[in-house]
Length: 142
Image (cartoon, rainbow, N blue to C red; front, side, top):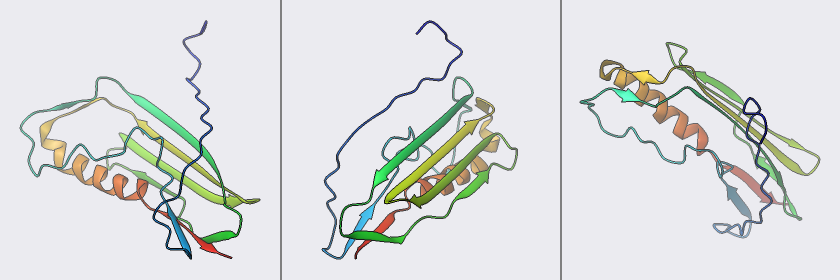
């Protein structure tokens, strides 16, 4: 609290009831704690400029315990995606390590203001980013 130059760090311990299991598979979306849960840019056209207010950077790290009796069947690929003008980037790392699934997202905003003329590329980037953030991990009964 004494230094405003250090990042804000939050640790969250939680239990999640895995609904949606069919008895053989568990489908799990690791995008539980990112600030981007829905795409705000759904409209085809934009009449005004977009001002995010400031540049920002989110680093979200998660470690999820694989339930007893299950193994990883499918993990989303680790990937990096960048806007054509390099103003927004998303890095996703997902791996299995010792009975745990390790997830890391880094979302960087290098500028805060977008003119309405650049809306189509921003909208397309957000669509692809949302698709990446909602890819599910699949666990299979061992």
